[in-house]
Length: 109
Figure 1 (cartoon, rainbow, N blue to C red):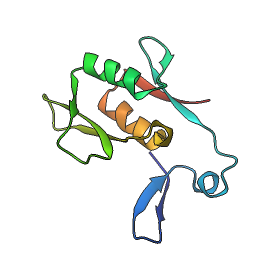
Figure 2 (tube, one colour):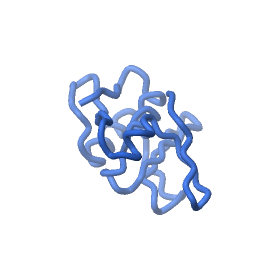
Figure 3 (cartoon, rainbow, N blue to C red):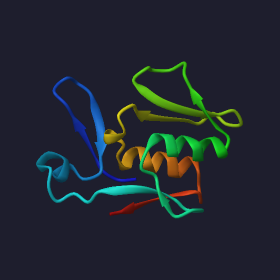
C-alpha cells in the first residue's frame, strides 16, 4: 500500500492513496471491495458482515463505539471500519484484503 501521510490541523494524521484527489475532490478513481468467490461488490456493512462471519470473524464490541470492528479468535487480527459506510475507502478495503488473502480484491470502478 502506498500513499501520503496527511496531517490535519487538529494533529490527527491519516494515510491517503491519492492526496490530490482528496484535496480537490476530482480526478480520483473510486474503488470497490469485491468478494472473489461470488464476484459480488460489497455494497453494505450487512453484506460484509455476513461474508466475514462465514470466514470465522466475529463482531468486536469492546472497542471504540465509533468503529465497526471484527476479530478472529484464531488470530490477533482486528478489522476496524468507520461506522458510516460512506467513509469506507480503499485504506479499509486493503486492510480486509491483507487479512483475508484470496477472498477479497480491491478494484477501480
